[in-house]
Structures are given as structure tokens and as C-alpha cells.
Amino acid sequence: MSQPSRAGVTTETPNPQGFRALGLNATLVQAAQSLGVERPTPVQQQAIPAVLAGRDVLAQAPTGSGKTLAYVLPGLQALMAQEAPPQARRVTRWLVVVPTRDLADQVSATAIEVLKPLRAHVRVVTLTGGTSVNRDQVTLRAGADMVVATPGRLLDLMKQRALSLDGLTCLVLDEADRLLETGFAAELSALMSQLPAARQTLLWSATFSPAVLALAATHQRDAQRIEIKAVDTDLPDIEQRAVAVDEGRRTALLKAWVGSEPWKRVLVFVATKYASIHVSDKLYRAGINATAFHGDMAQSTRQDVLREFKAAHWQVVVTTDLAARGIDVSQLDAVINFDLPRSTTDYVHRIGRTGRAGQQGVAISMVTAGQRAHWRLIARRHALDIELEEVPGFEPRDPEPERPLDPEGHGGIKGKRPSKKDKARAAQAASAQKGGPAGDGT
Ligand code: ADP
Ligand code: MG
Image (cartoon, rainbow, N blue to C red; front, side, top):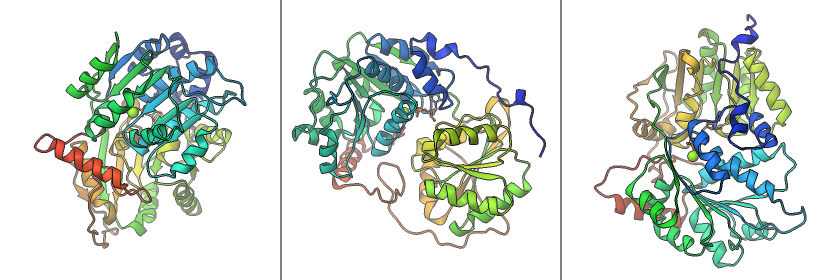
């Protein structure tokens, strides 16, 4: 394999001034850089100075535009500026409310990733349904500077006086359109009525639905309004393909592709850390330069892997959605969905990683019998018109199982079945939407 020139590795002009110029301090900018985040996205450009100035923000920006860091970075800066002593009980000053557990986990993970290299005493706690409420109560004894929560569990814990929001300075409603769609409206207003009035309120949404605008009108003051146009979700440089294959034949198919296609850098997405190790080991044993990239690896190890991937020492990196947030490698030839993403939003995040900077890229989703229904959901959400192919020698034999679709559109999430409350909410949302267009869920 020929060695790529160093100059060819980064195609984007680095702009270390970017985040600094928005008012973020150097340590935080460095922490972001260690996650591969160098230049602010448009929504970050506009929102960060406003958030730092204490203003309300009403932002509409498409999926994948970087809304999370647009509030996480200035939020952490505010929290770090008034750090409580290490032993003191934390007062919750920032509250982030999101519609799903998945999203809550993602937001917390992002904040924790940023905090990792910093020596900051900022405690981030995630509160969502489907986990032990007793454990939440114990966790909250030490308090939390930033709480990331879904509405139901949050209200439960407030009712039990396990969490006080009297010291709140900033409320963040992320994916506000979905929050209002999924039947959380009543819970949201119950929540809002219990929060200190003198606070900052940040609203983020992929769409400005009438409900979002009404919420903004009631709960925001002189908000900075941001509207970022949707980027082309057709992702014109990216060839998207979907291949039907049996679950047990995926590694063999992957080996066949990597052995025959002229791919120098391939990013493979799997569902779990374990799978990232397992799949990369199998490839490695087959003589392919493949390695895993996951959240349990030390930061320095991850940086090594990224550097080596950029230098084309590794041909294949096998990763999870969470860990992949830190991967910013230009010139990926292919993204392979070995497992489909659980959330339809992640599909765009994943495939957007290939075909960057005018390069031709391919994104191939492996669709097992068990994931057919979920694939159809992803295809519908993104209006994809892709035929499910079969590869000679790998024709699927497994029958498609009959199973109901998750009403929230997250497909079959192993070990995360909807709770009674989730189901009630979904039913409520479904009846509220009857006759209307299907929610986009992003
Ligand atoms: P949104 O909430 O707008 O849908 P996210 O905040 O989830 O988008 O970000 C989408 C992806 O972009 C994430 O993987 C995130 O790590 C990455 N990202 C965010 N900001 C930047 C940036 N400034 N530079 C590079 N990658 C970024
Ligand atoms: Mg988001």
C-alpha cells in the first residue's frame, strides 16, 4: 500500500481561531479539538456568542448541523466559570430536556467527552425512563451541575424532591419539535411552571413547527433567532446502496468487499463496542489491516488509531455511533453499515462521513432479515429510493421475522423496549397526528 502524502490528509483549512473568536476559552477549544472538532459549524457560529452572552436562542438547523455542541460548549464554559468546590453538593444550573433516551445518552456522552481532558469539577447526570429510579435518587444525592433528561423521569424525580431546579440558570430544549410531537406537551408545561422565571431558555429544532414557535413565544424573551438552511440531504457525492445479507454472512461479505474494491479507508459501523472488537479481530486475522475504535479505549489510543487511519496504515476501522463522533477523517472511500443505526438520524451522520471534499464515496448498508423493517423506516425517513440488492454468493436465506415497528421510530432496540409510559405517549402522539403528515422524527 502506497503511503499517502501528509498534505493530502487534511483537505480542510484548519482555523484554530474559529471557536476562540466566538468567545470560548482556550482549554475548552482544545478539548473540542481532541474530539476532532476544529471549526464551528454555521449554527455554532451564530449560537455560541449568543449563549455566552446569556441570551435566549431559538434555532432551527437541520439534523447533523452540530446543534449539540452549540449549547454544550458554552454551557460547560458557564458551568466551569463558577465551579463549586470538589466536595460540595452540586446545584443544577443547566437542564437539557430531550425527547428520547437515546438522545439523552448522546448529549451526556458529548458533554462528558468534552470534559474528559479538562480538570473540571462539572458533574453531568442523565435521567431517563427505563432505568432504576432509585439509582437516580442515589446519584442525585451529590447533585448535578448539568442534568440531561427526558420529561417523564425528570418530573418524577422533582416530585420526589430528589432534584431541585431552584438554582437553574439555563433550560435547553433539544429537538423541541419532537418533544412537542411525542406527546410531551403537557409534561413540558408542568415542568416549565416549576422553573425559576429568571433564566435563559434555548430552543433547538430541526423545524419551526407552529407548536415550537408558540412555545418560544410563551417562554422566551428577546431570543436570538437562528435559521440554518437544510443542506442537501441527497448528499450528491455519495452513492448509497443497501444489500440484503444473512446475519451470519456479513463478515465474509465485508472481507470480500475489502479484498476486491479499491478502498483505502473504510469505516464500518457496528451496534456495540463488543462487535467493534469482534468484527475487527476477524478481519485482522484474515490479513486485513483492521482495528476497533470505541469509547472504552484510552483517549491517547484513540488518537493513535485516528492518526494511523489518516495515514492509511489502517484500511478498516470498526466503530460505534458514539465513538465515531470524534472521527473526522477526510477521504473515506466507503462507509459500511454492518449493523444499521438505531436512530434514523444517525444514518445521515454515518454516511455523511464519506464523499467529503468532493471525493466520490460509497455508503453501503447491510440489511439482515431482522433489520428489514428498520431499513424500510430509515429509507422512508430520508426519502431514499434504493433497491435492496443481493450479492452473488451471498444471497440471503434467513426469513424476515414478523415484528411490530417501534412507534418512536428507533427500530428494534435490544434491551431498550418501550416502557408503559412510552407506549401511552406514542399512542397519544399517534392519535394527535391522525390524518396529518407523518413526523420526520429528526
Ligand atoms: P444535530 O444535533 O444538529 O443533529 P449533532 O450535534 O448531533 O447534530 O452533530 C452531528 C455530528 O457532527 C456529530 O457527530 C458531531 O460530533 C459532529 N460535529 C459537531 N460540530 C462539529 C464541528 N464543528 N466540526 C466537526 N464535527 C462536528
Ligand atoms: Mg441534535
